[in-house]
Length: 392
Image (tube, rainbow, N blue to C red; front, side, top):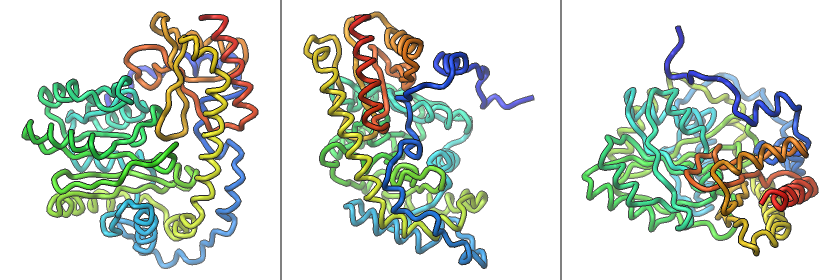
């Protein structure tokens, strides 16, 4: 009766099952929803002042409100990310942006290259469009850059419709830089393949150092994705965007087809489009507060786990950006990270993700949000440290 695009098994994973049986966590180190993390800068957005009187008459535009698109283009350009308003399409979320692009580029059973480790949502989004992920590896020994030899083998042995790169990646925090992009284009040229690239930049603003230089291409069709859920920490307002770049002819052809798709759904509500320009003017207030907290928590992480790191029992990864911290546990059997997550919840009601959740393909990793309040973070990491000493 039901579509085979859906999973066969809806059984919760072991963490979901544990929470169902044992109750809600006391400290949730998987928390990625900033609206639950007590950020004071939300007051700058003045959401209570949203005015709905100016939404009549309704003038739908498949790409989105022109003033809102111009405001976004100006905001991004001011950051050094040169953007043309005419090449922006609004969607109701980044997931919908992906679905539009998959509809644009692919037929059922077509393949897209997807990074691992990365966020598991990408696999589900492809599955719901009847498309197939082909997983390429990010090399932990090279700062999570693409394993180009493995990538090339996959490209040559599969008919690929598009490449997905999350920049910075969730959770490893690596950005796609210009040198790596040039290597990808060389591989495409050698393979005689013209592969569009989807660059998911939802965490772009949250660099731990200098952001990589903006780049564009005269040869490759690029779809850059962003959204208010991370840029302003407002996932409930449901507006994201696709920005098209690349050869003029390809961009124009893609725009005609994207307009048809977007016009079919018209999913982005008008009030948020009208208020987007005001929200962008104070977005930096939220970004600064998040950056301060995530950086502070990262420094706390290094301090609390210092002895374990010096004893070479763990490594603390140094992500370039994003909201996450990662530690690697050395010298243990596969799935030891799952055991740690289980024990930590059973003993202390602290929820944390094992690397398996993000498709780490080897080793034992623990992944946790840096968003939560500092005192709660300190307590959780201290208890985690005690457990690691007990079990290592």
